[in-house]
Image 1 (cartoon, rainbow, N blue to C red):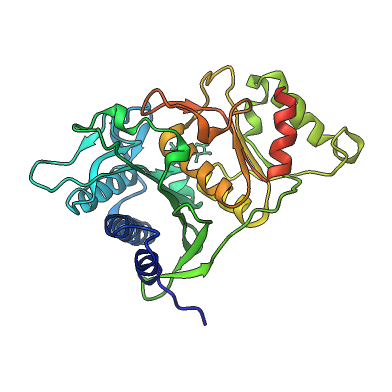
Image 2 (image 1 turned 180 degrees about the vertical axis):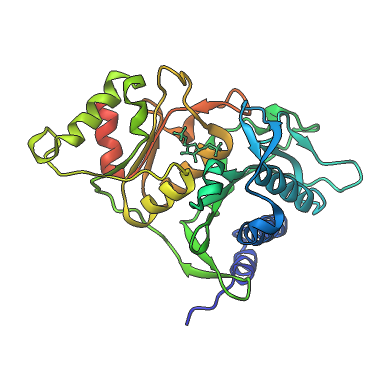
Length: 328
Ligand code: AHM
């Protein structure tokens, strides 16, 4: 039986100089925080996580109590480990600088503490997404600009899905690995080198937005729905959880594409580039898939703002290539 834990795996990467000590500590810390979040979710009633808070986040969304708990937990656990220069979170308007009381490192952590939080009260899979960047050598003081790096510069990215199983999916830029949280609360390696099937016939989109889409996405979905009688000449299946971690996890495992395009209500897109779309695109491309805004590779986009939104299509390579043609 495979019993390589995440700590053992990271130690091995350190020994062969694939990561440095600070990245090892940082990854162990984030994933430990997520073990705590997992335990809070599994004991939800005790922590009263199902209720709304009275606060609105920077995105103008009503925060759930669990959004706030998870956010504070990750910041508190990681600010003191001497690996980070700064932190940015979906739930915090500006960047979080490491307090003077702690030693500053040279990594930057960006995260969405709780993706899919509208699904908490209906017991559907939710997750935590993170992205790790490095500061520029010339960065003496950390500002929002320090974080505004292209997705391809990510040193590591990952997500934790709190589903029937708790699963960590991670890339340090050398493929994608999956770890399962076992009954001893250890991350145990389940799979190395996850690859997404190149071809697929499954799409994932919030179809209730159809009248808001532009003509290119509308046309693609209409063609999918025509099945073997349409120009794409295959029968498509549709799956939509409404929790990005769950939808992407399914696609990583068995192929498919995920679309959250810009529409006439969300003219810049709905999902956030820096801590949702970039880390997911990094994982998808590390697994052999593709991620595009329709016209531009996601990982090549020069970010302009910390909480920037973006329209995205990602997943199985051949299917994303088909959609790119609709954009042309
Ligand atoms: P959140 O960060 O507030 O949870 O929003 C992100 C979520 C994604 O998980 C999901 O793909 C999307 O929002 C669904 O939004 P909608 O139901 O509005 O289509």
